[in-house]
Length: 66
Ligand SMILES: [Zn+2]
Image (tube, rainbow, N blue to C red; front, side, top):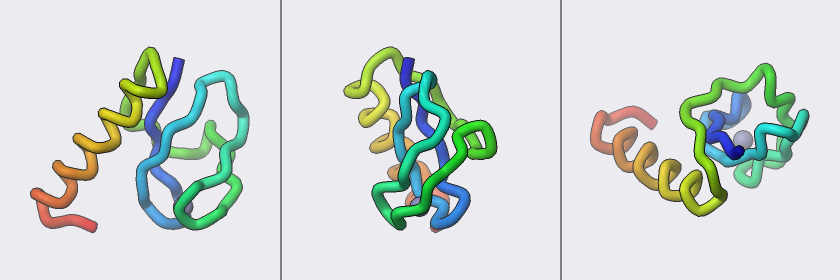
């Protein structure tokens, strides 16, 4: 399983495997502890997760937050 999380340093979306404990944010380089990060979605595959990230980014832009 994969999940989409929000980086608590830079606030951007990234994907991680649910089996991982930590993940380096590809945007700001922070090492994130996954249990502390906000999880916004789950997906069965990396492809599905990246599609979700694309959708979430679009929603975020349309709602005026960044
Ligand atoms: Zn980050």
